[in-house]
Length: 242
Length: 219
Image 1: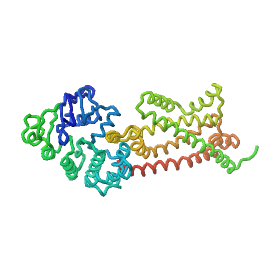
Image 2 (image 1 turned 135 degrees about the vertical axis):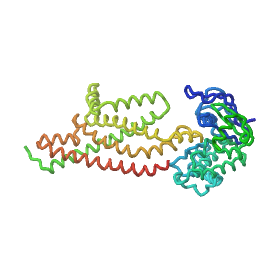
Image 3 (image 1 turned 180 degrees about the horizontal axis):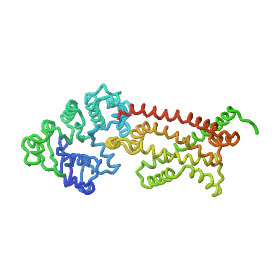
Image 4 (image 1 turned 180 degrees about the vertical axis):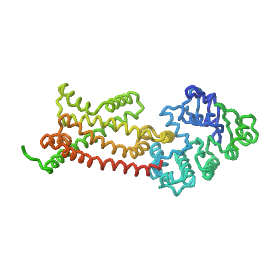
């Protein structure tokens, strides 16, 4: 059974038909890269998967729960799905440690000592064990993004959604973030990424979903699809980004 | 007619300035409490509450403070509620300040990036938790300089209370002028005292803005 299942999802922004009947299934442990031009609807699709964005038609089921933007449902979903953003969205008034401990203590009622241990654990995992007491502003973009990943991991999600998480980073900082993702993938974490990192999609990803004009235009095994695209649109896209 | 020395004038003005300060403090405290309530209503997601605060704010921002004072003083009197000049001034200034303060504070809350809300939401925080732990601590920091800045407006606004007969700094100045026929000297002193009250506030506002701006770069 799939962990995330998207069935014929349509979405409009006013008159603009941004998602035109998306079908997608993601199994536990899979790493799926959603690629495509800007405006193709890939970020919108990702944001629909955890209820940040509503959809007008179709159904999305995540970990057995129907996804909607209803407050209560979103909170329930947040137990199973984490999200990392392009702009990090760390809480600037809290230290790295406090950023990570906030949700476990508030939502899961984890006691302080345990939350602290957990925060230290996930920080070690992303290679920032020594940054617990720092404020986010003191960290580089790549470090901030790894803290954001750690913050999501502290809630022990079954699937992690990553929305262009390396796009705001200086090129030399991208590698560290991707390395963390690679490690998560190796540990069996389900990852759904909107990304422009074709090498990562090919080498670490299991599957590529190419979106074009609000539809899944081409999809399949990452290595096969990227090496031998079947549609002219994907061929053109790969030519443009590589 | 008794003679007033310069010291007499100044001494009486300073005594009256106590009422200006007290009225300012009361208006600021009252305005903050009502303003806070309005701010929460305004940033709630309930349409009726938002509309009520909108209308309230439009009314108090869109009419002269002097009219609000008149209405508080004479209007309530017509309704059979006997109000002193002191009560009317405190009431009108409180309502006036609350409208402006809540508007300033709403702006501070809304100026925070949407990503802060989204990240909180994705972590499973509810509305109140997001407010309490993520939004308000940041908004508070941004809000301090403009709030202190607005307190200058309150201090100056208290001068209008003189018109309904409340003896604060301006009214005392008018009375002393009537007794001494030295308008320039008297009102220069009055102005100086206002300046001495307001200048530190506006400097503090500027200082806090610079200081918190540097700290705000954390975002």
